[in-house]
Length: 517
Image 1 (cartoon, rainbow, N blue to C red):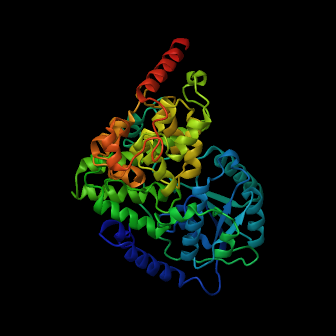
Image 2: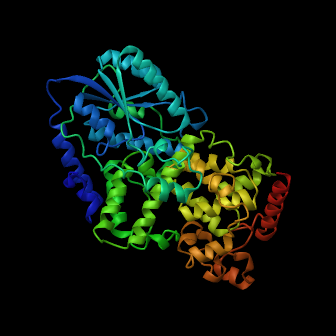
Image 3: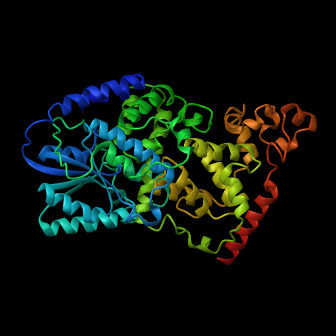
């Protein structure tokens, strides 16, 4: 590995410095682009790999000739899993960042790739097509059809692994069936398999082919119409830096400032022990291989605590597990993995759902999480479990409602992670939390936000409440509420359900289901 390319991942460095270093490397590469093209044209189809470093498909294409870089927005084949609003917002800015590193030469189109790619290949006399594999069921089916189509025309299609540490078909039980429990999947399957490949540097001699008959650059990106027409996006813009350089900067900052203490600190939403890399990984602005080795090499060098690094690596393993489940069980996004839950007594209460979505449940830790989601397009993982448990167990609303809301609001909305995680919290998935494990939003808030920094940030109407009553303001004496300027039912809602009674009702519904199974 060329360590110079990954220096920003291993040393303290500001985001500005990361961008400057990245730009210098890009200029060196693209200084070789202009002038007469030589060799055959290879199409690189960017998908969920919006980066230049450690991009196996791009490197393979560049090794064979000039590269025509293409992104195609496919709302034709995605069906119900067309990107949500937050994802489209992120994609707009990620494509802009990628286009800048490609010197404004990114070809950007919209439509069915099965129709676009053959026409494009004919127009530029492409000798080959390269892409990094995606694992959503609709993408797998589409890509297989495209491969067949090109094979009939004698044009080579080369797919590569640029998104996962291990392929789903390579991590199986001894009997050849997929794992359904995380710990043996990770410890016995992944860690016993050959280690992930080392990250690749940027292509050393990347020559970009131009094709002026199609849309390129910023104008073509804007023509996709990805940005929402309301000011909600301004909140997201204040939170995130987007693109490959930003991803490297985020990884560097986490390793320097968040990995120590990660095993315990990751549970506390107000602490810095979170990587916030999920969106960058989903969009492929950084590869899981780069993240894996940036952390593992520190551990092997004796930097920091092994338990923190090992736990962080296991979180990358959970991402692998989710993608393995989706690959082997393509109905995961809409079908219970445990069929008995098909007959569960879910409730239908649009008012409760709307209050949950808006962060107006009357339970401060739940409301803080839902408001963070709306304001940042992101939610801390511990809080995701709390709000998920509250939706499916205290409100007894179907997990599909939560999955759909997260899909629209998360900048890291990933079909595998979103589906597997919602089935986990609902108790109906693989390696699921037992249904009777119901998170108490009062005790969870007190335990993981003991000083109220997180709640007060996102529920400012409770900012003056003392810690003792912050997670349960309805128990506060009238004088305390008055002193904090809180009027329950007016400035802050009363609880929409009783946490104890709703828990008992959920357990009764589960007991009835189990008795009928």
